[in-house]
Every structure is written in C-alpha cells, then in structure tokens.
Image (cartoon, rainbow over all chains, first blue to last red; front, side, top):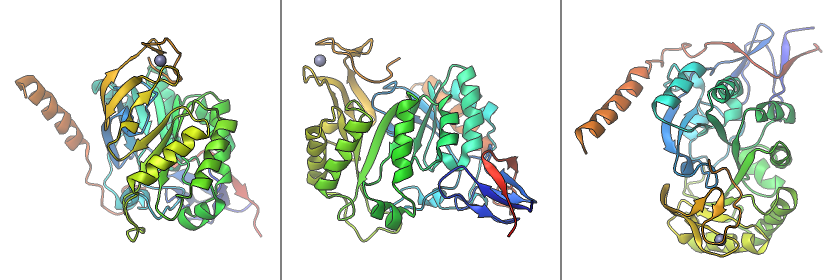
Length: 324
Length: 44
Ligand SMILES: [Zn+2]
C-alpha cells in the first residue's frame, strides 16, 4: 500500500497524492491519511429565519443557527456565495467554533435548529456530522441546504441525525450539471430518493436561469419526476436568478417565467409550489383542500399562520411538514 | 428600540466580534481533523 488516498465522500471521488487537496478544497492527504482542514472553522455564522434556507414547512417563524465553512464539491457558474464556496479555507476569515460551541450559541440565541448552509455542507461533513450528533443529544433540530452531491453511504449515516434537507435541484439535464456546475445530475436524484426513504423532511429549490434551464418542457419533466419519486407533498421553491459570479451576462429571471414554472409544477401535480427572491403571493402557503391562505409571508417574515397542530384551521386538512 | 433590546443586540454583536479570529496568517486554518469516508489506493 502506498500513500495515495481516494476520498469516498462525494461523487468527485478525488484521488490524492501526499499533500494534494480535494476538489472541494477542504480535504488534504497528509502522509497517506485524509484530513478535513475546516473542522470547527466556519467562515460564515449567522442567526437566520428558517424561511431563508428556504424551509416553508419546517418550524415556521423560528430561528436557525446557520454555519458554513469555505469550499464546495461543485463549481456552479451562478453561485451566489462564490466568494466563500469557491475559496480555499486559508483565504477566508474564520471563527473558532467547535461543535460544543455551536450548541451553546444555538441555545444562547434561542434557535430551534442548526442549519448547515451557505456553501456546501458535504465539504465540511465531519464538522456537520459531529455537530449534528451533539445537537440531537440537546434536543436541537438539524437542517441542511445542500446540492445533494454526496455518496449514498455518508448520506445515510448523516440521515440518522438530520431532520430536514433543502436540496438544490439545479436543472433536469445532465448537460446543465456538466457544463454549468462541473458535476452530474444522477447522484443528486439518488440523494433525493435516499432522503425520502430515510424520512427526512424534504424541500427542493430550483433556481431558474434565463436560457439555461427555463424550458417549461424540462421543468414539467422535473416536476413529474418529483411527484412520482418523492410525492406531491414535497414543497418546491422556484428561485429568481440574479446575475452573479461567471454569469453576469444574463438578465434576472423575468417574473413571468417564474409564474409559468409555478403553474407548470402545479399542473404536474405538486401541491406546494413557491416563488423565491421576488415579492409575489406565491410566497404564501395555500391549503390544497380549501384553498385558503395557511401561512402568509412577506419575504422571510411570517404575517399569519393558520396551521394549528399540523392541520388547516379552516377545513382541518392535515398539512405535510414539521410544525412543532 | 428599548434599552433592553439595545443591550441584547450589543451583546449579540460583541460575542460574534470577539469570536472572529485574525486568521489570514498562512497555514493557520490548516488545523487537521481526520476525515471520514476515504481509502488507501494501491500504487501503480
Ligand atoms: Zn383547508
């Protein structure tokens, strides 16, 4: 046996010689052993409304203690957090925040949950995992916003401690994942199915980018796949694109495109379809049975919540989600 | 903003600011923690 190692965390499967760093920039081969260099060293720490993740059916109106380290397993040309996701950990300012401290801050700031977010939590898997274990012991919920680009074994191990996941389904073609994200679609679809099987509360975000993934035929195909494989209750968030990073040549998504996408998704059978990054009434949750507004929102703020004990206050229909 | 709210916000900010490290010094972030999910590869 030599000193070359292969990382088995994500589908990139980086093979690393001594002193080489993984594609996600957070893992290094030191003398034939693989190490994480971001453990307990987040570069972003905030207290956010859970709605910002976005989670619309998970403890609405509560705060999430949110952390991220530098690094990502993908390199999307439209990344909104590219300054940290595409940075080397050494290039960022970090906090010294081991799992124990995350737990104590989560309590201090009265957060119901911890969110592993902003960049890609798979890139700080060990830190997330140990924190999640401690959180569960302390009755704190764990949530993540992830691209779902992770191998099945580590994902299933994490699922024992994770309560909710918001997965970016960035497009429904291999071509998009290949050319725009430097990854592939299939592992993401597999992760979605695994999360469903493991009974993790799941929401999906799809950033609609003009000309790149705004074909309604493909959006329809994606939504039908979701209904068939994950169920009609999975909330889907269509998010508005703004020019960022390497895609500054494209305009912001027209609101009409987002409205069309939402209609397409509802026609495909999805019951909870939202539009994010723009103020419309598609920020509200509507009861699929009586059609009344169940949760009225403005941005990340809850104006009114008509769900009690997980049921519609008007017609008593059960609402999918985690409400308490 | 009440005095209490102001104090809360101040404590909040202060605790974060005092956490922030001057960590741009080269190599300082390379605190190693053994990774999960990896394997040795045969040479050649
Ligand atoms: Zn109802």
